[in-house]
Image 1: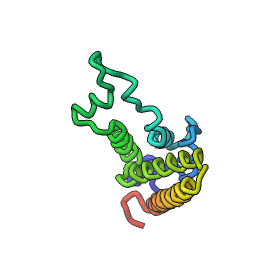
Image 2 (image 1 turned 180 degrees about the vertical axis):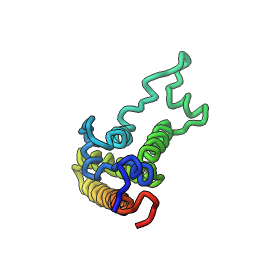
Image 3 (image 1 turned 120 degrees about the vertical axis):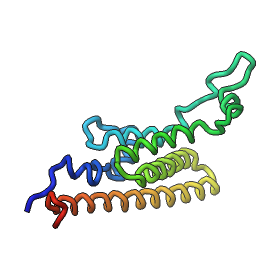
Image 4 (image 1 turned 30 degrees about the horizontal axis):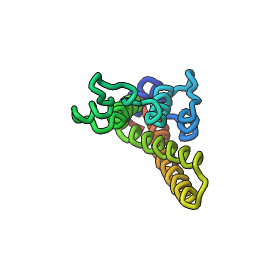
Length: 167
């Protein structure tokens, strides 16, 4: 039985996707340049840290309007939303699937909240918020893992097909 070559599989199913563990490591800053899904890992890192590096109030007009106020005046209410949308779109294009970018963003947001609540867990209310963040992170990871497994299964099916599309 003849199998499809790697280039044809990539066209049919998209490139390899990182695991949830790879993504969480990237969100913590570990983004290996030689990973086959490095572009998705880089975008995941940026999604997980966007609130830390997009700081429009570091600039101001001569009249004293901060960057966030200027953005608001031109109709941009949260610059991070625009950055996230672009990164999600880039992930979807690299993955050749429309559901991977939103899942990576969901995991990144959950990871960011988990990290935030881990740092400030001093009271009972903080503990409840941390428990909620832990649950949300677990659910986001499980969702992405299901998508990853589906993608891997699709690649496996494609590899078993003849070049003419028959099994």
